[in-house]
Every structure is written in structure tokens, then in C-alpha cells.
Amino acid sequence: MKFVQQSRREPRYFENEDGSTYLPIGLNLCFIRDSERRTEEENLGIYRSWMTEFAKNGGNFIRIWLGVPFFDIMPERAGEFSEKNLSHIRFVVDLAEKLGIRIKFTLEHFRRIGDGNDPEGFPGVVDFHKPLYQGMVSNMREYLASAECRRLYLAKAQRLADAGFGESKAVIAWELWNEINCIGGGKETEQWSEYMIEKLSGIFPHQMIVQNLGSFSGATAYLCYDPLARLSGNGFLQVHRYLDPGAELDVCRGAMDVLCADSIRELHDRNAHCPLILAECGAVEANHARYSDLYALDKEGTLLHDMLFAPFFAGSAGCGQPWHWDHLYIQRHHLLFHFARFAEAVSGVDPVEEAFVPYHTETHSLRILGLRGRHQTLMWCRDKRSDWKSELVEGNAAEVLRGERIPLEGNGKCVCYLPWEDRKIPGSIRDGWCELPEFRRSIVIKQIKEDVVYEK
Image 1 (cartoon, rainbow, N blue to C red):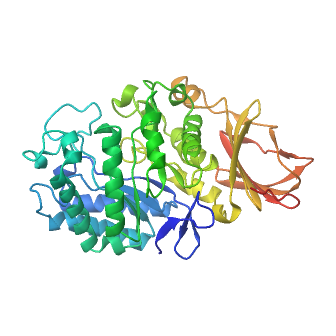
Image 2 (image 1 turned 60 degrees about the vertical axis):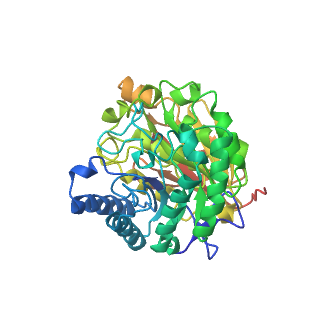
Image 3 (image 1 turned 180 degrees about the horizontal axis):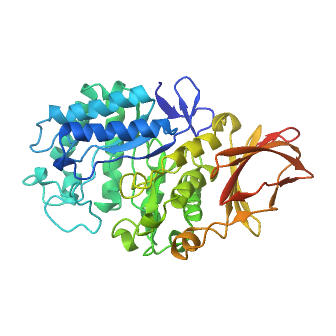
């Protein structure tokens, strides 16, 4: 295991410190619901089970929140640290090192100092308020400006570094805050983020420092995502986006693959020279009231499949990283095999060496997301007629597509991978067309180029 950084050869992707490519296959494992109702061993056992099973299915990247009760190293009094909670973090890091998993740790997530109502809470997990700072500040605006609160934030980071986590090659990044636009806007959060990125870069010199924002779903999203793309020292550019029937943007109420791919294009429009990651994706009830009722119906994981595949084939540095990882969705229906299918689809693919250039097109039946590389072209073709509305709402089974073909440059060999069957079929390209085998929902085509070299 080696430290991960932005690639020096192809800055839209990641590489290990030795120059080899790192392609993150990840999801959120941010917290355990009702952790305080379980014993310490039970909670550690859940993380052991989650991470071990995830690694068996090709997963190599997770995100964990450090502000929740089980991991918060400064839980009750300013400047006093919990060695017990520090040992919980150490358990996860040690396990990640053994399993070959990288971690992004989110340092904080609270949105208020005092009590209040949360439109998007996590019952049985953690509230979004932080009474520890009462008496120092009365609201989040004061918190951002407070020299003492900044000192305490950095003291927590320094304690984590002193514990050796800054030297762990399992830790890929430190995330400043979860959806910081939810605690303030404009210059206040920008200036705070710039200050903390500089400070944490000194505390964790071997790891990336990143920031993130809430779901890109409304008319004002550009007001916070534009500055995020310009944020100096930000290790990579992230976006959160959900299928949300209450969203202002039409794309967030449509097909899952389209909304995921579009989120990466939004990032690319803002910064085409750094890794782009869909860091949270999922489905919610209107305006993030709670997790989506569609999850109960999605036993095959059609939503999850699109979350994983669409971002990478739209130009992301890795797969999309789903939320609702536990009994609410992914664990509920035993859907981790979808990560193994994505890992198989990209097996033997080196995005840095290929210097992929994304493109998209359509046929009458298919949406096609493609990546043109130096030696290969990859395509993910998605059936237009089969999506969450047709399958989960209307109850129509996904049909088998027959007789489809897609245009490709030149001739040569290709391999067709059917992710819903986990099966590969040799193919060929003649006169600029690839005849596709029968498939359901989606298919991946890898063209090995013989007479075409696409230059950037």
C-alpha cells in the first residue's frame, strides 16, 4: 500500500506515490445507526463485517465521519480527548491496511451550536448540533470566525496526526466538513476552508485535504460549487447529488444514470484539470426528507448499478460513491456484488495511461457514455426504456435488448461485458459498427484499438 495523490501524468485521475494508477471503487460507511445502543465490540464487529465483505467485492475506498459519537475524539469538553474513541479509529485504519482499503475521514459535520430541528436528521445516530461550543459562540457564523474554535478544530486534527494516522497509507484524504454550505455561505465558509486546507496540509503532508458541499440540485448550486472549484489546495473536486422528487433541477428528478453523469459534467465545466468524484449519491424523498421509498422495491439494485457505472464513464476518477449503505438499502438487499461487477468492468484498465477523453451519444434505444483512450475505448450503454420509473414505479420488468449496434472508430477486436450476468463475450467491429449481443439494462464494450490512436 502506498500514499495516493493526484496523477502527475494525467491530473484527472489518481496515482500511487510510485506512479501506478489508483482507481477508487468506493462507498460511504460513515456511521452505524444506533451505535450507542450497542456494545463497543458489536460496533467494531459491524465495521469488520462491512469492510471485509466490501473488500471481497472489489471495494477499495470508504468514507467515515469522525464527528459521530463512536469516533469523536473530543466528545464532551474542549481540549479533552477520548482515547477510547481514538482506539476505534485505529481499529478501522488497521483493518483497512490489512484489506487494502483507503479511507477518507470527514472531520466534522454539525450545523448548529444549540438545539433545533433538522429537516435531514439521522435518528439514532447523531444530531447536527454541538453543545461543546456553547459558551464560546452562539451560532455557526461566530464559530467560523472564532480563533478559539479554529484552535480546537486544529487541535483535534493534530491529535489524529500524533496518533500516527497521518503516516498511514490507508488514509487517502481528510475532508474538512460534510456539506459546509449547510452552516453558512459565501466568503465565510470559503475563507474558513482556505485557512484550514493550508493548516491541515502541514499537519498531514502525505495526504490530500478536501472540502465538499451539499446536493447539486437547485438554482443556487452554482453559487457554492463555483467557489469550490477555485478553492486553493483542494485535493480533488467532489459533488453530492441525489434522485430527489423535490429538486429544482429537472435532471435530479429523472433517470439515475443521467443525473449521475450530469453531475460529473458539471464539475468538469468548472475544473477539467483535477480528479472529479461523485462522493455522495442515492435516492431520497422530496427535499431530502428521508431515504427513498424506492429502496424497498429495488431488490436487484438498478439504482445502485447506475450510481457506480455512470460517473466513471462520464469522466470521473472512480465509480460513484453511494449513500444509504446499510439496512436502509445496500445491506438490506445484499447488493455489494454490484461493486464486484464494476471492478470486473474496469479490470485491466489504466485511466492514467489511457488519458481517457469522455464523450456521450445516443441511439434510439441506448444512452452511451464513452471513454476514448490511447489504446482502448470503453463504452457503457444503458437501455433508455428501463429505469427506476418503468421498473420500480410501473412494475415493468427490464426487457432483453436484441439486434442493437453502436458506432465505433476503425476496426479491431472488442470484448462485451454483461454486468447483470457477469459474463464476457468476444466481439468484433466491422465497417465502424459493433454488433451487440443480447443484454438487459446495460452492457460494457472494451475496444482494443488496432488502427486508431486517439490523441488528446
